[in-house]
Length: 492
Image 1 (cartoon, rainbow, N blue to C red):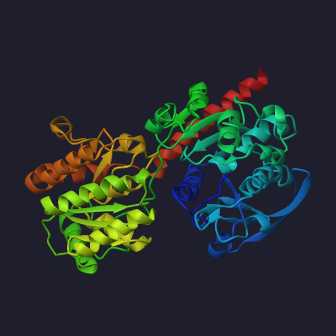
Image 2 (image 1 turned 90 degrees about the vertical axis):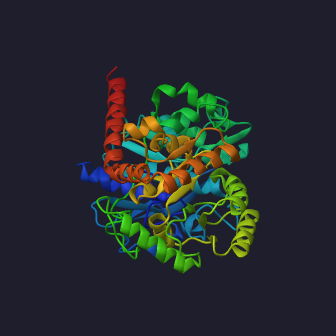
Image 3 (image 1 turned 180 degrees about the horizontal axis):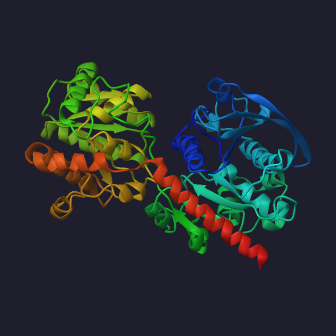
């Protein structure tokens, strides 16, 4: 597996959770997994017992040769080997991809080095590889290098590649002259391969050259083939629809489990959740200065305060409901400065009904998941989403926009789904404030007036299995299909 993020070494988002958990689950199923990532500064702050692998790298970048080395350790509590591609001028920096809201200007150069470093490491470390699982644009050149430069080399003949898109909006787009840095022939800079509206796209490289493509939910795999969410690559993805698959991310239930969660003041299980959630709610209301009211719906939100996450819709509903409905709000996250300012103003004006924390706190995130009655996720688009899955486990009913992974995981409550005992939340189809408000109203009305139905919805969600074990088995099936196709091609 090639990635730029993996818990506990380096993280900016959900990619790190995936690449820290999936390899361990794959290994527990009997597979030999090796993880490659850059030796970022964060790595040395978070990793123990890093050793030199006694392997030096000489990587061509444009018309120069850049030297680096390989370090090694293991993912904690596992036998998953991790190799770090070290080159301090590229990776010993404050951020992973940029600082102060600006990308590093040499990001193309940095990740050319990483991708070539992974390809060279396979030979230098004498690894026997069936498949390279690449993740997001930073690894997009690996399938291109394999197909154009390494395919005929000894040890690379039967290697297959899977390219996973975690968020299509992040594309690794650079000006066309950066093509020189890749070392690839200019003939590949065309509209069918690496060229993207006049620029170079490393994500498109992965889409075009990988043996198979996956993304992080079934619905998102369909959505990115349409112009609305295809980010200019919908045509390329439609062209490869026969090798495009959606596999939902999983949840680490060792970390997200209300029965054992050490962050909570009171633990609880699906067998007896009412008292535990009520106690957690009271404690959070005290801590955040909200009115202690056990029967007032507490609505939670955790995430980036950005338009993609529906922050504009949340604010509009809040402003209206603060005058019309008796609910409480707790918001945790950072993002757009204007959004932060508006939320801070609301929390000052309505301090007993609105609590905001414009930072990130892992402990507070766990407490919100346990204490809230409703978790709001009105994302404009959401490749997978994890907080709705955490919420299900903690008995906090999600209200979501039916997109991407939210569509795949949340079954809207209505009389039919209640009768079938499959309702686990509330959803809305149109991305509008009124549609979000209507779904949230249905949730609050059910919470306050239909307790039997509410308790059924909570119990249904808490019993569902969204573990990494389920996802890992699906990846193994996909790997086997890809490797089989490559072997058949070679034999033919």
